[in-house]
Amino acid sequence: MKATIAVLPGDGIGAEIVPQAVHVLEAVAARFGHRFEFKTADVGGAAIDKTGRPLPDDTLRLAKESDAILLGAVGGPKWEGLDYSVRPERALLGLREQLGLYANLRPAKLYSMLADASTLKREVIEGLDILVVRELTGGIYFGKPKGIEKTSEGEKGVNTEVYTTPEIRRIAKVAFEAARKRRRKVTSVDKANVLESSELWRRVVIDVSQGYPDVELQHIYVDNCAMQLVRAPKQFDVLVTTNLFGDILSDEAAMLTGSIGMLPSASLGGTIGMYEPIHGSAPDIAGKDIANPIATIASTAMMLTYAFSLDKEATAVEQAILRVLEQGYRTKDIHAAGTRLVGTKEMGALILKELQHA
Ligand code: NAD
Image (cartoon, rainbow, N blue to C red; front, side):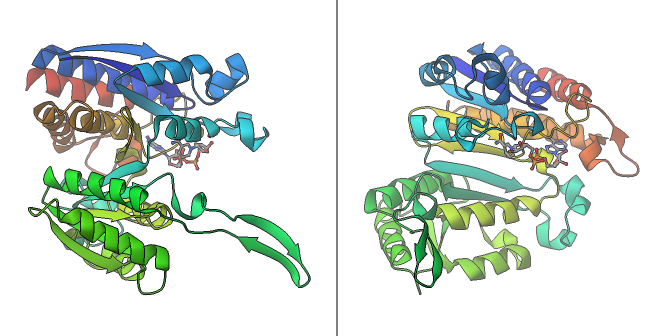
């Protein structure tokens, strides 16, 4: 197959980890007979420095014209004094909004050799492989009315949780489709015992499930879900939930697996998806060749699955990561006694070698 991939390294460690992921995609193309064309553009602080804007028109156009987007991370202390409307992070909101990326997929998968990096006991997390599907463009972060107003009794802060049937329907479909590629179980997380928006959420999810008789559906209240994630996380396959609940639960789920440098994500919904590590630009370690590139490389596996339906190729990338970890190579964030410490470039090169010689 032929595809154009927009490459947006962004700031901080983005410039170090993204090239490693591009090399991996190049190796996938060579090994499996595909043609990927990479087009690079500035985003975030790097774009502000050149154009004054975090998401220049050229970058947005490139993103819209490509088949998938590979993003590093944006932000850093250099741009923290700027107004919120022109901060690097605005670029992410702009891309999500412009591309209709309403579904954020965050897998939390434990590599067994890293089990001791988790705060939970090995037996609780061994074999963990869950996927959080978070609604990304609705709910309480966007609902109106919102704001802080003065009243006779002092100030009043207001946010409103709003979900419409189409919004719930489309995110539920993403979850059921994802479950079909996994263990065919969806757990919908809500607060339907208290919130009307959750009552509608549950009703619509049940309705959507009628179209997926091969996928098991379960409902759970968010407070119980938070508890179950640390008690017995392996009971879950796909968790689907609202923007706010997903924001919190996806971080909880991610940290079960140990390091932030390991975890990929995909933002989907429109015709073009965006694939990126869950971590930020890590200014504290930028430019030192110590950042872990695995989250970004694993994001390319998500791209291969979700953008191109290249499941065999995605598995090859995941296997290459696994084998390098099995051989004991570790970047600083996951380094432990008895393992071999490598830098960003070397970790990328090792994964590339595994992929090329498998
Ligand atoms: P961060 O994720 O950048 O870093 C948190 C900690 O994790 C740091 O100690 C960092 O060194 C470490 N870390 C992160 N990625 C790592 C990797 N691949 N390998 C090894 N260690 C890694 O979060 P932060 O420090 O809160 O934010 C830094 C900047 O990134 C801020 O400007 C923030 O707004 C931005 N940010 C961007 C995104 C994004 O682009 N999607 C997401 C989160 C934060």
